[in-house]
View 1 (cartoon, rainbow, N blue to C red):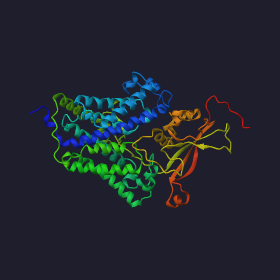
View 2: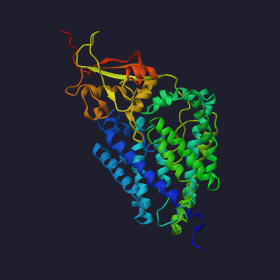
View 3: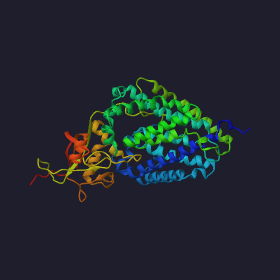
View 4: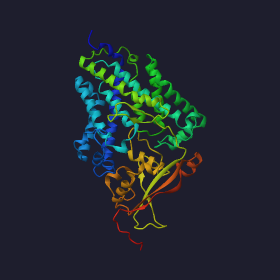
Length: 479
C-alpha cells in the first residue's frame, strides 16, 4: 500500500477544482483592488502611510515583506505580481507544473497578500481579508493533478465555511433583537454599507416576505452548515443551499468578496462523482502527506480560541487570533441600523464662505450621494474609501485617523485621491474650501420615484466638518 493513500480521494476532484479556480479569481480581484487604490490610501503620500505605520507597530504584530523595504514602486510590483500569479492559477497553471511548484505558487500568493493586509491598517480591517488569507493558506496544501485531493484539507475547508456561516448566525441571534423577531430586513437593504442596483427593490418587497427571508437565513446559517459534514449527497445539497443564499445576498447589495468567497468555499464540498466516475489521480508522496498531517494538527490547535469565541456570550466578529490570519472568527451584521446617514463632501472656489456660497459635491463611485443616481454593482471589487465613509457617518471616531488627510488631499487636488472618486467638481483647480455635511438618507417610495426620478430622499442633519482650507493658506476677505 502506498504511503498516505488512506487520506487522498479522487472523489473530491471537482470540489478542489471549483475551489482553486474560484479562489484564484478572488485573489485576482483583491490584488487589483490593492494595486489601483493603495497610493491614495496607504502609499508614501497616502492618508495613512505604510512607512509611518511600520515605525509604530512591531514586526511580531504585523509581519510583512514590506518591513524589508517599502516604496510605492515596490508595493505596486508586489500587487501586480500577485494579480498576474492569481490570473495564471485561475487559468490552470497550477496543474501544469510539478506538485512542489504548484504549492510554491499558492504560497507566494498567500505571502504577498498577507504582506499587504498586515500594513493595510483600517482600510483592510474587514473580515473578508482574513477569510481570503485563511482560505488561501489551506489552498497551498490542496495539491494539483499530480495527486488526488487530500481528504483532510477538504474537510478543513468545510470546517472553515462552517465557522463562517455558523458564526454569522450566532452573532445575529445574540445581537440585534430584530434578528430574533424577524424584522431586520425591514431596514437592512436601506441601511447596509453599500447598496446595489437591486437594493431599492429588495427594500420594497412585502414585509411578510422579509420575515421569511430572515427565517430562511437563520436556517441556512445555524442548521445547514452541520450538514456539510454529512455523507454525500447530503453535503452537496447543503453546499447548494449555502450557494443559493449567498447569491441572494449578492443580488441585494455590495459586500466586496465576502459572499463570493463563501460560495467558493461551499463548492469545495461538491461531490465529484455526480459527474460520473472521477479521474484516477495518483496517490500523494510521503513528504506531501507529512505536510498535510502537520497542517491539520496546526489548524485544529489554532481552532481552540475561535471555538471558544463561538461559544461565548460575548462573541466577537471578524477577529484574527494570530498575525498570520491562519484561523479566525467571522460574523456580520450583529446589529442592523434603522436609519441611514451619509456624509456629503463639498467644495467651493470662493475664498470665504458666506450664506450665498455655491458648494459643489464630490461624488463617490459606490456610496450614495446624488439622490437620482441608482446604486451600482461593484462587488466583488472592494471600494475601500466608500466603505469607510459609511462607518464615518455612523461616528466621527471611525474617521479620526484618515478623514482630515482625505480633506487635505482634496484641497491639494491630489490625483491619486481623486481617482478614487466618481466625480471631481473642480477639474481645473483645487477648491479653496472643503466642508462635509451629514444627511439622513432613505429610499424613496414608488410614488416618489415616479414623480421625482430620485431613488433617495435626503434631509440635512448637521455639519460633519466646517469649511476648511489648507493650513497656511491666507484667509482673504470677501471683496
